[in-house]
Length: 191
Image (cartoon, rainbow, N blue to C red; front, side, top):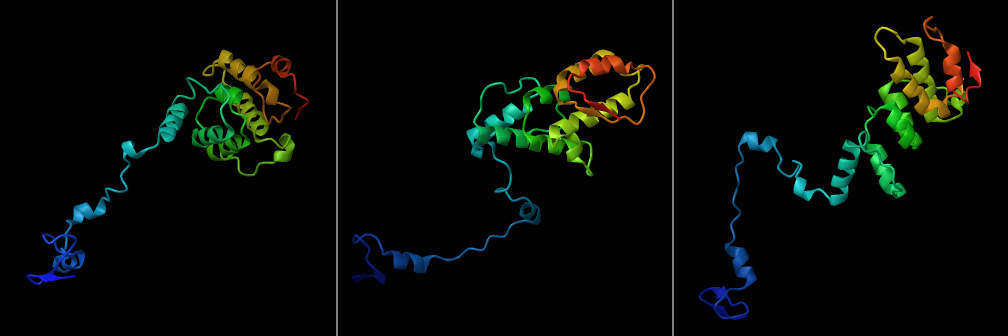
């Protein structure tokens, strides 16, 4: 390396070497106002950085109740959809299109707070337990003045394959249990 005017020469005679450039570099202190320190721009969601897969999953999840997934979807993608689905989806829709037991466990525990679940009493299936307990609650608290009987029978039609046992603490006198039993082909026990 030759020295020219106190600087070592880089690749050509008109530029200085990297070591000289580093010597001239001075660290500048940047003072950030307090309000800007609180908001880290790197942590703000940036829609342009979101993957196409992630965007598609959000669209499917947001529209699941109106347009449930009917087609064959790879299991890893379906698992991602199920994990993102809220527990507020109508039981009639979810019964017909969701088979993942983790979703039904989430519905039982998060949505209804059924923590001391005796899964063995419900065929060791979360989905079966969910619909048996939900039908029990709907039957026990059904009010002919405020609840729609057609909606109630639509619910029974959707979940009839998952009702094997009903445990009732009370039954309103205005409900004919024989009509309900006829609608439940798998019903084997009423307590």
